[in-house]
Length: 342
Ligand SMILES: [Zn+2]
Ligand SMILES: [Zn+2]
Image (cartoon, rainbow, N blue to C red; front, side, top):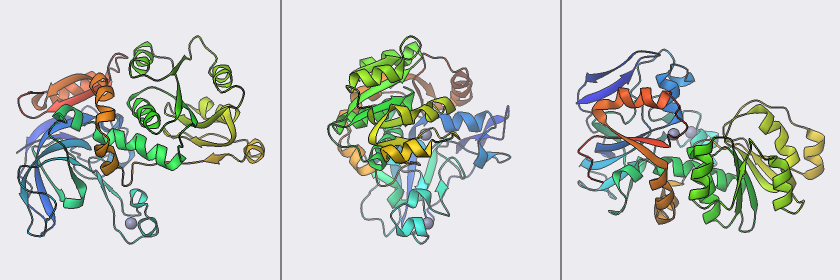
């Protein structure tokens, strides 16, 4: 079968490898139909991703396809089912796993990051790492289910409640899908961004308060919108130190700050204590695929607007080069393995 391999900066190519076989009675083999290109994949392509440095890597952690073979102990899935891949494998025994946080397992395996990913024609993984998707979810949309789960995880970690106010810095794919999830949960969302294309998308998906950080003072806007209370939750999806350091001033009392695109920052512990602020980290996702798929109708519209470019799998290299140009008009890029029919 064909696989796309990245071997560090400026060295990527297609190769032919053996089709993977079922590993045990719990394995499920899937023919890949669609893969999303994510920031992590771009870092791997540019040779600056920690877990992949100096390694040959088949990237891709956002993918979906059709089941072609199942192990004898597989109960939930059958040949022909349309499924999306959950890209985390965990041991089930370490401290994190014993406390329901397999997403930070000591022995965590992340598909396409520290092991092979979905930019190949077939992929084998345990049944628990595949989730069935409804027929009305297109293959392009299915490739974006994983990033939806990242937004859902941030909301779960931050304990979003109906009526909460949330300020999101950065309207890239994760910022947008976080906004979409928070709105579903009844939060009032404010999003601050500098790129015109991204501001437009935030408005188009119905974010009620879109702040143009080029021309508006984000903190002043937040105080105006929240009538001086501050945002109950601030999320940094931009990964900018100054934004993380200013979050304490944008937060309400009893507020929560989530540095989503984590970057080192200093924190005013006195002010933090005074307001009893929580700083909450959020990595990947845990148990978010089932709820995201269950309410996928609420994501569909947003996702359709986010997908700006679809490439044939044969043009994967071209797609990566295009992604690296970081055109501000580019939303999500999806690769397709078979003739594009949706
Ligand atoms: Zn991703
Ligand atoms: Zn573990």
